Image 1: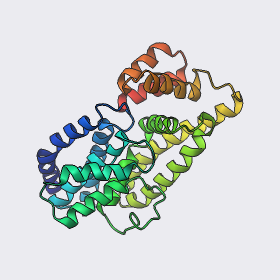
Image 2 (image 1 turned 30 degrees about the vertical axis):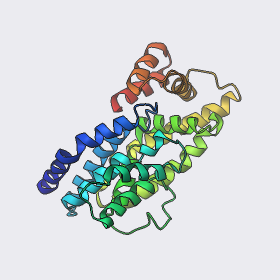
Image 3 (image 1 turned 60 degrees about the vertical axis):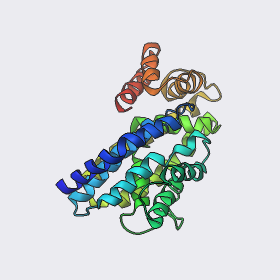
Length: 277
């Protein structure tokens, strides 16, 4: 495990600052807090955790594989700076390819990175691009990305991007829960080598799932009046008003919501979101 930790530090020393800086520049004119450079940094933190968990189980990645992973992580959603649609991976690939054109990777290594970036968002887990056995770059990127879709940060990220894709609020829960379940089912299979780590992720999954279940329940009881700022619907309305319309970042939006809200469900959500962001 010490070897893996050292190799991660070596990869970070070489790549982390330039990748973070480049990712920040890509999003400087795009307000999309759910998928910007902070999302990419969190995904890298999850990738580090995965590498350490794998090392504990005896699976040690080499330095070149770790370099490929950190690069893929910091480019996977950069296409969101251009389009918020599901095919953003193709644009992410082009952005990554341009950055990597003069870097020291073989054609095969470069293609592996670019393929992982392009196909990271195929969440049916059935296409040939991601249905490969073992611990691949694609698998590590997908799982790391999926880990940021859990807990309160995950609930916020889902709500924001689905709203921006014009999903009606009344349909939000059903759309999210289907996607979330597929993500976590795949995650359970991949993380079966580490029961304790999987248990912790299950708790985070339940927090996201429970929020959207609660949202469905409230919508069924209030009918067509979705203007309340209380309960799960209130959280959606705060996200629309503060993040999407006023273009606040997550921390400032949480602070503003906590100043305004007088509903425990809402304040509890934004307190926890603030800690996770």
